[in-house]
Structure formats: C-alpha cells, structure tokens
Length: 157
Image 1 (cartoon, rainbow, N blue to C red):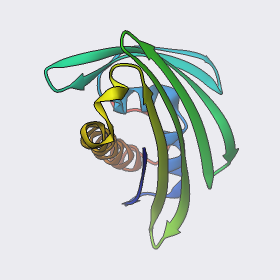
Image 2: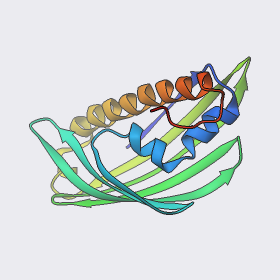
Image 3: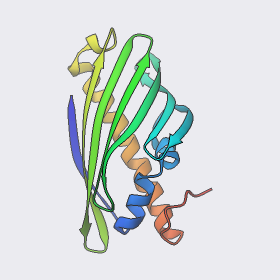
C-alpha cells in the first residue's frame, strides 16, 4: 500500500532536517512507541503497539537508514515482527525551500503479511493514513518548537 503527500513547515531546512534525522525525536513522534534503542547512526529499533480497532498489535520494528543527501533527501527501511503480522515499510522524504519555510515531499510503501495483513487494504488503508496524520501533526509541533528554541533541532522538555 503506497501513501504519499507533502507538508510545509515554518522553519528552515536545517531545523526540519535535524528533527527528521534524530532517531530519538522520531521515536517520540511515532504513536504507540513503548521503548526505543539506537544501535548507531543508521540502525535503531522500537517496541511499538499499533492500535487496530478493538485491540493493539505489538511489534518489534528494526529501522535502517538507506540513503541520505544532507538537507535534501533521506530514505529508510523498517521491518516489524509481531504475533499475527509482519510489516515492511520503505519511506523517503525530500526537503525543498518554500519561501521562509520548508516543503517536505514524502512517500511510504507499507506491506503487511500474516493474519493482520489478510484484513485487506480497504481495512488497513484508513489505519495507515490515521497513523501517518498523527506522525505529521506531531512532527509539525516538534519542528515548530525546535525553530522557536533557536533552530538547533533539540527536543523540547
């Protein structure tokens, strides 16, 4: 299932880049993160509970950064395993200047296998879109906070 879109931020590319490329800040944006561990600059993992209607799907997700052009482009692969599902995702974003702000073009290709995957795209697509919207809304808040703090992308406490 492919989803894509764009978002404009009232912050410089540097601020947006810093937030998007900090695994700890990204973990804070993802719904349902229970724990998070950074192995190195390109590998990290998270234990996540994804809400699925009447319950939640517990997954161990391994992330790997697969490409990068600083301030312009980054790509990521994720593989998740849990009872009843295997999830794969490839995602990327491109940052462009937009006046005083930054325009982000993003795309994700998500695959779900196992019993949860058998629910079908018609059932899973609204759930995926809801999760994406939650992440983008949280990202917007984090970027705004980083810009107001002086533009270093540091998390706000």
